[in-house]
Image 1 (tube, rainbow, N blue to C red):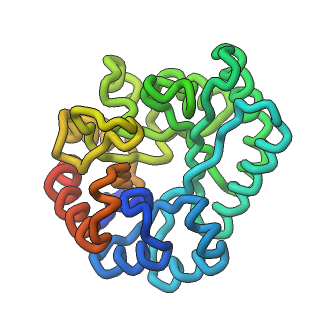
Image 2: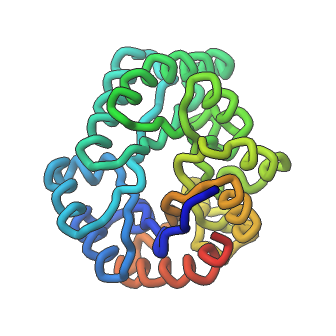
Length: 272
């Protein structure tokens, strides 16, 4: 039988307030009663790894995930593996057991070969991650990003690899909501769900499709249904609100965080 559901499972993914420092993001979470934060490697590196770990710890927050590892499809395999090992070490330093893996795109028109390089890389990284107590969380991405970011396009694909190499998966609403097999694959995922990320689809898409996200409840994604399936699958971890949106990035981070809290309570939390 599943354990009790935590009172506060909201995590602010740092990308939602992209231009804020680690300190600003942590302070905002603490001020608004958010108990967890999803960090990104670039701002952590800029702020300092040890310093980032300390401010999170001093604020009493959890780190729900670190983004991102992956990008295993390029020509320099050894360098990519070394970079991922560094990312795993950073997870340990920050106190998180979840490394989000954005696996990489297609650099040379060889989609089959790119997928094989990802599979080979994951197989080599898993022992190092397991020794560190870190789960590699494979993130399937919307097919629109197959060329430049993610040759894993469906949750089924991600789970095929997760089961083969013993990793976890990310269920990111914006990437998987369209999939007619989604309900079935979430049930299949079960305990392999290492991270659940929510936002909504922005329509019409902006020129930069990467920024085609909006806050939960503002688009066509049925987050209530998806969240209920994720909960029924047994996921009891933090739920990250991760929104790439130019208007949000230009706004006052504190106001954005306040709205994230309101949307989480009204749109997502009732289904948990």
